[in-house]
Length: 309
Picture 1 (cartoon, rainbow, N blue to C red):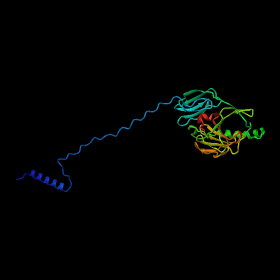
Picture 2 (picture 1 turned 30 degrees about the vertical axis):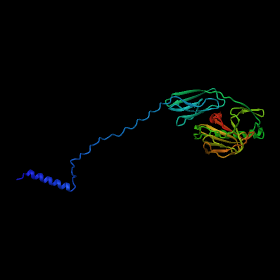
Picture 3 (picture 1 turned 45 degrees about the horizontal axis):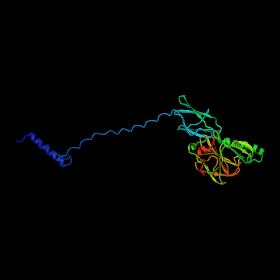
Picture 4 (picture 1 turned 180 degrees about the vertical axis):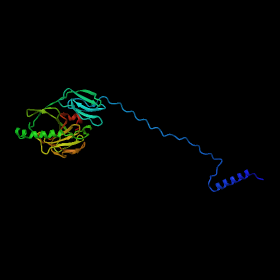
């Protein structure tokens, strides 16, 4: 007589077989082992941040400190105000700034940065002297004015226009660029030269002259904004164009035959601005390129380098 336990075993086995045949329970392959569980790998750690550069505690200056020259610098970290020879000058968001030395600059200049905590960083700058020529020019002292009275009548309004143009504050990064000559050719007048007009001493030459045929196109030496485009020829400058390159640095183009840009235009380096002429006080067609930073008159050759014929 079969035992009750044996009956229960047989009933359980039969139910298991029915479940397998019905697909409810997958058959077990005795020769197959379950795949081992791999350990969970943690996410890789982010790379370490690059070390921060050390704080700049002093000025960094580029350029040669000499009369008629320009220097570009970076202010110490944390600078909240910058002064050059006692006058405030702007600092760009990246800490860069511009300074320049007039043709008659004194032998020493002084930079002072005031930091956020009130401390001052002072940098004295020794300024080397320039070497200036003497030039005799066979041109009327009063330029295109008919006589002294005509000159005295016209000149104040012309100077007022020039002063107003140079006082404008414009946004441009042209001052950061490597300047190019607006036109190339034979140098016929040199910056800083003491000039004598038909035997009468005049002021020193405030720019550099390049002799080329009338009608020769000239181009922007750097990016900038047109702040003066003369509507009529000035007595001395003739058809005058002034382009501001930002940070108080501006170019003046004198004696032009024609101007191809107008007041307020934004120009880019290499863009045609007009054509060379002989208007105003000039003995022949040439481009007079003058550079100025605030009140300091500068030598274009010190920014643009040697001219290529």
